[in-house]
Image (cartoon, rainbow, N blue to C red; front, side, top):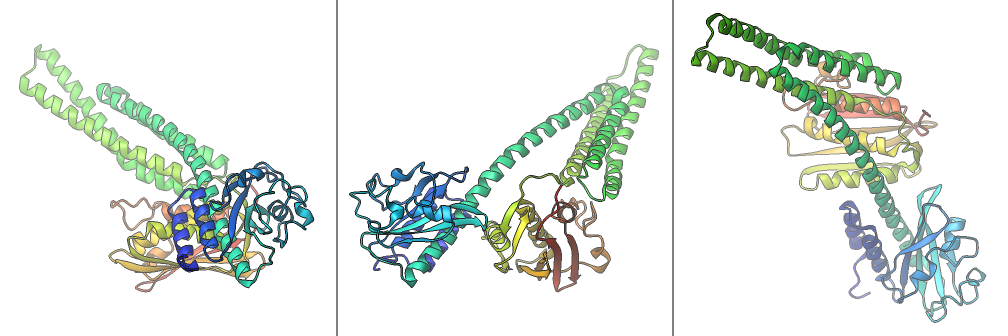
Length: 478
């Protein structure tokens, strides 16, 4: 049609809207207008299925006559509920070539009288093979059947609508999780603030410093015991060893500052008692030493608090309830949309090759966390000193019920002496430069714990790194 947006161009614009987080209604309205522009006399609507899986409400259909869409709000799907309600109920496309003669419209024919619609073709929008999200409908004012072009348009529309609706659901889910995380961070911040106040009080009362530092260590031991009891972290022994090693330096510095200040205070007090007065220079020197000791205590206690927070972050919650059926290609499509949006101002490329028949019963949120961590690790380490590079995600069937998922880059590679240690907690080649050494350890714990799989690393200097995960299509039950 003259003036109509070409379908490929419109698809690209819609995917960009989805990636940038545009409101769902705006995206679906834009989708209906794009499809309408491909065929003269075409009207399109999108209905969503409520969370109860039974009732519908209209969300998109800007070209429909006023008052038409609200007619269907709140109706329950069934075997004879027009084209849309029937399509969602039967989970298959429903073609109504003549509304006036189709028995599935018997209960709605009087309701839509005066709108002059004669044909309606409706296709369900799926999240996965078990879950219907809604329906996409095409209306005409004359009796007609769909041709090959219309069927192609329906397929394009339902695919894009499914991506947009699932993205919106994931955003709402992430929002809930973000609120929970904010509450947890707030709680931990209050705990750390209380510990900091105790540490600051040690500057005023140095005699209590040893007890307060012991309380910090006791908090770490309690957290360690909780993680062991709930089986939240694989290889806890090596992690505790790394934590103890990392905490040794700041705590040792605190003990040294506290004991030094205690000795100086004792000596200063003895001098005052003996002479009955003190020199201004002696008092100034004492205050300077007290300030230095306080600064050292504050700095090292901050470092200890950061290490404790890192320890908490490593724990993977194996009772995460965000488990569902999903198609691997659709899920990774959505993950890559987000990752590409983050990298759109760089020259790094993410490519993926995922077969369309791989269905999982697992944890897509945790899988997304793993892929995001691996991409970040490739950019920070694999492409260090470079401005461009390619990250490739490939999936293939390993054996019955198992899939091999690899994330590879064409970056700098990993030195042979470091390759066997990349999944160890606190191992990093950027020690002292902002690296915590926890990224790949978190990946290992999620893959081997929550997802029930196996992960290994292959690398060659100058040619890149490949992280290979062997995952069950049905994750273990916890």
